[in-house]
Amino acid sequence: MNFDLTDDQRAIIDSARAFAQKELAPHAAEWDAASHFPVDVIRRAGELGFCSLYSPVEQGGMGLSRLDATLVFEELSAACTSTTAYITIHNMATWMATTFGSEAVKAEWGPALVTGEKLASYCLTEPNAGSDAASLKTRAVRDGDDYVLSGSKAFISGAGATDALVLMARTGGDGPKGITCFLVPADASGVGYGRNEEKMGWKTQPTRLVTLDNVRIPARYRIGAEGEGFRIAMKGLDGGRLNIATCSVGTAQAALERAAAYLNERRQFGKALAEFQALQFRLADMATELVAARQMVRLAAWKLDNGDPEATTYCAMAKRFATDAGFAVCNEALQLHGGYGYIREYPLERHVRDTRVHQILEGTNEIMRLIVARRLLADAEAASRIR
Ligand SMILES: Cc1cc2nc3c(=O)[nH]c(=O)nc-3n(C[C@H](O)[C@H](O)[C@H](O)COP(=O)(O)OP(=O)(O)OC[C@H]3O[C@@H](n4cnc5c(N)ncnc54)[C@H](O)[C@@H]3O)c2cc1C
Image 1 (cartoon, helix red, strand yellow):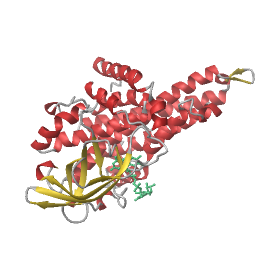
Image 2: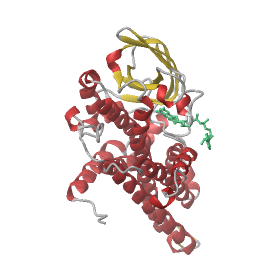
Image 3: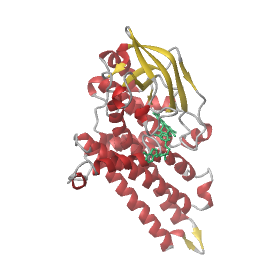
Image 4: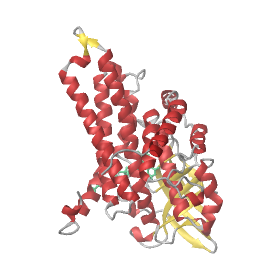
């Protein structure tokens, strides 16, 4: 097994790092403080292909592997977690539209989505359907050449500033098989937006409630067949979970590097903090957990790239492990900075605030455990297969 990255992959990392250090890192703290959504910078990321990293080449996407996409997201998130996390959601929604969309969706929306000229939101969660997403109630009723949608979606990232809503609604009976995926133009008549939620972190992107009041869209904006929506939404989330896991790894890497530098710089009791073995051991544990998390994410990405039947299980494991480890590393890095870790002049408190939500969204870490446990208990051999 070769864990080395290829020359092409190193070049991808270099270009992502150069962009991140120039366009994201210098502004991340200021955007966070002002709750500013940097749409112009996201569009510039799109010019480099970062808005459609794994969307099909035939639709104008970069057609990279999921593993390659994680390399980009790791570099970007080390510079601005929250903005990168939105970019990953745009990538997920764009992949869904350009992979499963009708010819009309691909032709009318694909070109602007893949470049980031138009931005997308992913709309699954509802006020009363979070972890139990298959119980969603938003309705889409066929009416001639149109669908008419009514209902509401909660916690939608980017909402109010995006152009397309990749949205799951019920066309059939109860349960996952009654759900269909649509592309709803964000400015369609009857689409309403709640206030920008005041959040602990992820402040550089808006999060809003979206309401749909008899929203009429052409039937050609359906993504996939009727009843296929939940499957498409979950396929999107396999990649989405890798992406969010990667945002934790990238942020934690930045926090680890700062902590190591700080231990060398800061002196107490007449010596550098780096000389206290208790602190050395903590740094060693942080690096160990982080390397394990990165390898787990890359393993899951590789499984997804290679169509492994258990790819979903590995994506869930990676999301659970890397988001827990990433948050813990950021929190430890804050602790190692003492009081300075808690004040805004240093980025540690932002890293902690930004990575906390990764344990909650795109399926909570409890739901990740549910997915893994279900597979382990699926049949007599399952527990020996997943290794
Ligand atoms: C900042 C932010 C951005 C978001 N962006 C989006 C977005 O762009 N699009 C979108 O569709 N959604 C988005 N979400 C929604 C997110 O995916 C949900 O919040 C998440 O899935 C959990 O749903 P819930 O909040 O309703 O919690 P609930 O489902 O009510 O869960 C509450 C608690 O119970 C636990 N729990 C629930 N069921 C079980 C069970 N069976 N076994 C064990 N424990 C369980 C959960 O893990 C959790 O700890 C976002 C959320 C946030 C906070």
